[in-house]
Image (cartoon, rainbow, N blue to C red):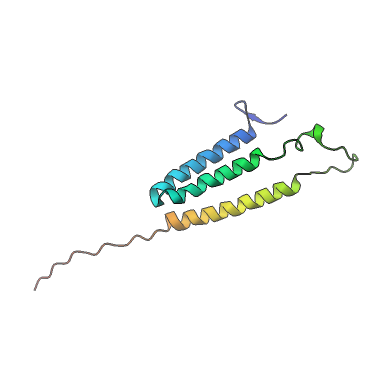
Length: 119
């Protein structure tokens, strides 16, 4: 039995949250830097969605797994899961650094004071 939230599966909740966050970042970055800087977040969400859509679901079901000895359980998706988590972690760090660098660390230049010459 899998976990259900409001009748929806955990994957649907994760993808909905991912798309909501990426759309919010798209709107924020588009207004600050233009549409090109916000487009990366939409591409990232699309890439994660496609990867999760084509994930091999038949290996996750217990009745479809190949029976081995009772003492040894084999997880066939361990390596792809680890690679996927590592890639997502690296992308999260890179996107976070870019967000801080481009949005939060903008220099604010002071405007020159108008001086009147009193000679």
